[in-house]
Length: 458
Image (cartoon, rainbow, N blue to C red; front, side):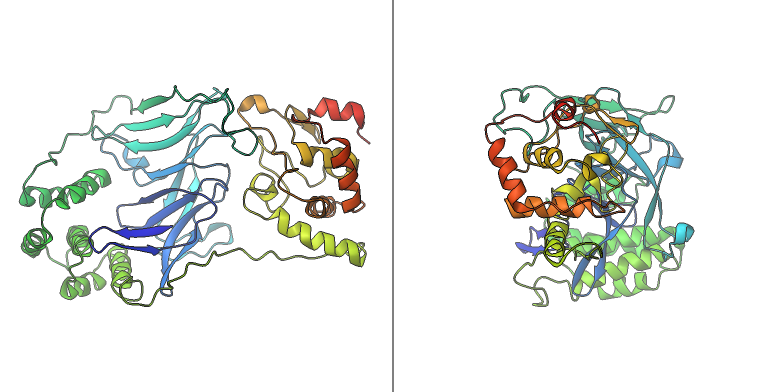
């Protein structure tokens, strides 16, 4: 994730969101949230060191997540305000809503302090039985309704299918408008072309989108004019009055946006009676201090931050097998590889991705398993009495034959066959080499029933 300042023409590394940063949003108090499209992880982005760091925001339930947003609408019910929405395009096929706890959270063994935001799932918000419903973005309009873009495509994978596959639909898509029954639309607020004084009054508005579009409009005016007017506007607010804390914070954010430092206003907010205002002010101070891209404190070279893979080698493996297992642990954990769908625990994600832990598909025939990983898999598959059906909009399992060499493939097979309670013979690179050669002419995914005919379940 990067931060671009159009006034100073600086672009800086902000925080590590890998592999695909799809979605970023800010709430009423300026808390920053982000989502990773491929892995489906959601984060709160908080100041740390000379920069910022991602912290888990919710327990991941679905993937992928191409977009996220904060609910802020005068049209929607009060109990939904400032909740977190994520869009999912495989399996769940809809929008999931999470209640965000900003004042600390101590359930489930957590010990979050105020400002360390944690989200808990709510009832279904929007879900479809259409297997090709692919919500890719969500935005609130000026009427307060929620607009959902639906990619509406049968083929969505780029690893499983050619980018030039003629079955890809480049012409169709949908936009849905979601409203709250029986509630009036949000009143329109004049923004475009309004004078600075009127725009500053818009910053009192309770809806995040109104204030955001107002700040965008203020960007069309000279910074000198905006800051001069803002300094007069904030004089009417009392720093000791909790009801005025957010108005003063908007004034501080305006100074930050226009690169005009106001130490006096900053200090008032750092002493605000409202804790969230104090935290927001501390974030601005961080931007003006160690995280200032012009200060020389930030690294000039961006280094990818990789999660360290901790490996505990099973005692029944020989030295050579242990080496394969270690290599396989790294392959399994790569972005866009096994861990993305089957998870670190090997438990998969019901009802979409089957488990590897305790699965006879994994611990049984090594030839059957190698064929799956070499050429991919497509079709309903039964694992431990549960059926995982691609008819629910799930793409095929990726064919890794062109991605992994014989050693890497043998290593990751050895890893999954001997992790999470599994115990099965290691797979040797020579074995993979022979199976690869024997199936070199295959150009399509395997079907489960086809493999079972060749290699009956043990």
